[in-house]
Amino acid sequence: MMTTTTTTTTKEAVWIPTGNMNTARTFHTQVTLENGNVLVAGGISDSKTALGRAEVYNPSTGLWTATSNMNTARCHHTASILMNGDVLVAGGQSVNGPLSSAEVYNPSTGLWTTTGGMKTVRYHHTASTLTNGYVLVVGGTSDGKTALGSAEVYNPSTGRWTTTGIRNTARSLHTTSILTNGNILVAGGVGINGTLNSAEVCNPSTGLWTTNITMSTARVYHTASILTNGNVLVAGGQGDGDAVLNSAEVLNLSTGLWITIGNMSTARFLHTQVTLKNGNVLVVGGVNGSTALCSAEMYNPSTGLWTTNITMSTARVYHTASILSNGNVLVAGGIADDSTILNSAEIYG
Image 1 (cartoon, rainbow, N blue to C red):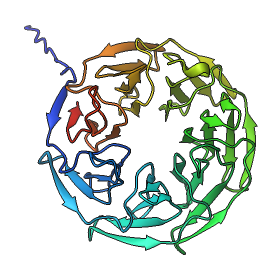
Image 2: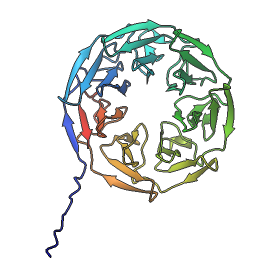
Image 3: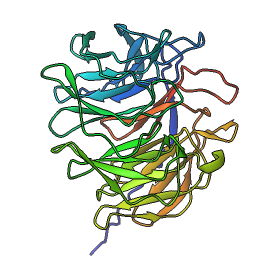
């Protein structure tokens, strides 16, 4: 009897340039819509003034199409997908200063509608869509100097914001992660007394905050993402004395403890981090001291190890990244090593 041997070849992922955005931008937001397209909004361009322009990327064609402008030009804002597929944009900075305003984008019509404003002007905050469909906004700053301790919740049904429980620590430039139990983990950032290693958890049902065990390393401008087992990976950033970090740690939800894992190959901050469909985590770009990075590396939760990945075509910092419906990753905009604001985009997959 003849034996037939079948060999399966696994394609190695690479970076491929895709269509350029119509507008070069940084400090913008990027979200993958329910229809698989990607919305990029706001930021700043070469004029160094906030942008009202928004555009949509179609992964099938690799092309960007301008959509209607936001009602308010803004940068350093947040963008959140609502339960109905619309996108809520909140806060940020405009040419006239920090914003409390918010607006909603309807992907079906391509139009922006002004909704209720937040109680507090803020930027460098975070925004998370809760399991009940509300959006929780946390921290940030109103003046670029003092971190905010306040948090507020947006109700899409009424278009109104309400203040929620006072947090234990005022912070800006932190990360926020939605845990598998629906609670919200806030970690690191900068507070009144400098860079933070503290973390705290909000229970949306009660609006109460509880202090979590502290991270091993104080960090700001870091990244965080949920692993497939529900744990949280935090990587890079700047530490005490503005030291650029290559360290990473994982919050084990079962024990409530942070566990230091292997270091990244390259210290970096202002990078992006995405959990892939296979459970690995891709960290991309950022800056190491004064040099923008084109390097990328991959964390494997099964081994706890980082491996250096193929580099991007363009070094970039202050860019955005999101996972597409096919599992590929789209990276867009940012600032190049020569301080040029970029309109380029590339795909990892």
